[in-house]
Amino acid sequence: MQPRLLALLTAVLLPTFAFADCSNPIPVSKLLAETQNYDENPVCATGKINIEFEENDLSEGNKSIWLGFFKRGSTKEEIAKDQARMDAWAAEFQGKCVYVNGHFSTATKGHFGMWPAGINSISNITAAPKNTCKL
Image (tube, rainbow, N blue to C red; front, side, top):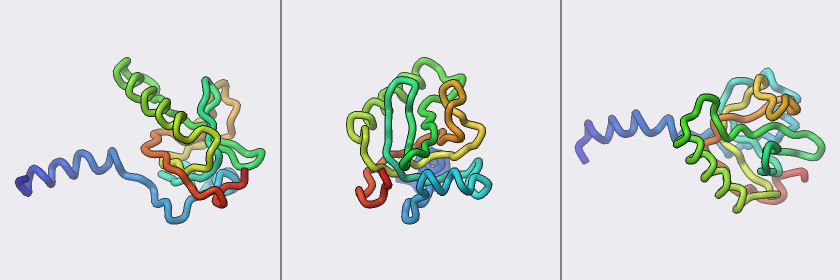
């Protein structure tokens, strides 16, 4: 591949696939206790994942945050793509301890505003060691 084409592809695609550093994942309780340190920033959060209709969240004990899989104003094609990713993640990780890469925001309150904060623009979900989560 030509160097200029490679540089162009890297510049265009890398931000799409950029993940927050998961070498020090942030538990849900810490995100909520120290919102000022994480608000409007990329994070790698850890907790037990729940993906079901209108109740997508990441929890640690009795604390939880919303997981926003869909973007407002998305086209039908974008919604279908996001739904397919969410369904695949649900099939693989439902009820398990995971790392979630995305954008933390206290403005994201979830369905009917029932969560104190949330993670949007979710770029990746991976399995975390069971001892990582306080379930």
